[in-house]
Length: 463
Image (cartoon, rainbow, N blue to C red):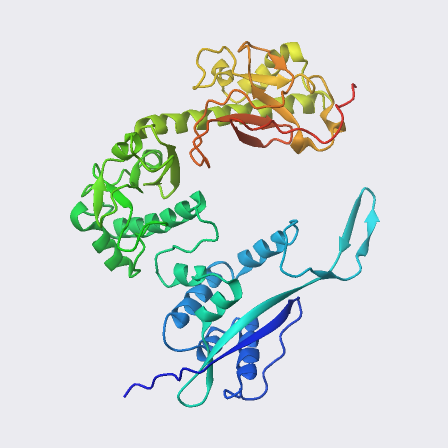
């Protein structure tokens, strides 16, 4: 007969300090009749990454064991958690309010030339609440999900929703973010493409496609879009592809929508993505689509798939033009003691460097602005300047969208962005973007309504 856990519950509140010291080794058997000993052993096991030991200390019923195994497997895939550690380290540099203030050791270090490195050790107290349940044999086990809820104050656990296969309805804000939707789409798309690769590159048939993919992937509830009600789904397979092989060419796949967010919430939904994109009563400002290449994309409502593909291609071409023009400008500067070409003939002066790359004058054109002779202007404040003397180069705009559209155009960088003609494949909203080439060599995509990057200093000095 199955033994049920007793209903007695004990809640322990512990304060732990995040630091780099190793956890002490467990040299004695765990007293499972002591709640505090169980919690101490669990913290030690977590610090060592000992999944088996942590599983032995949690309530056996429910999804705790599965969650711990999935988290540990994910950590192994991310080089033993290195990615997570890096992410947490980066967050500590940001000015974010924390439940408890951090304490720091005295800064230590020294300056060497024009650079200094100062090291500090940060101790940040974090309070956790552990909920334990007394078992029929008198021992105590940690109720992991209840502990997470007691610590966060939320009604659901995000970790349990993600790693136990439940619909991801957990969120701190009342509105599902685009990131939630994109992340879930990536999961769905990954499983669907695994199925397709295992079935001679063929898309499943529409009537049972979710059933077939779930049975193959062995992961349940992957087709539940964030924010939908229980029993609803929210994804549809492209009806134009069902039962057919996917294109072999990667560029074709990059512009082929395999799956998309749909207002049809039924299971095994199939439809035409354009019907969703062009529907007057669509619930989406941006529709997230899963591409046959394995990438995701966002398409503004009212834009067809073909139009989106054309815009994406145009943006890639324009981005490549800006990249080559930046390289030509830098090559010219290297041959001229760090000095950029003059404002009134910069296109003419870099033409030999463009020709070296077997490019043509079309390089100065933008597919989205074909009426312009030259779609790019040089920052008049930088033209003719020695860029070696300019600090904070990552803040300086070198190339920006042209206003007059003529060769050798130079203009001052305004405060507010202009020339926003591009639809960004990975845009965070339905706004169009401008492509801006920076003095550092990087390229930025600035949405309409945004502001041009500006350096935190005065204008560069004349040579």
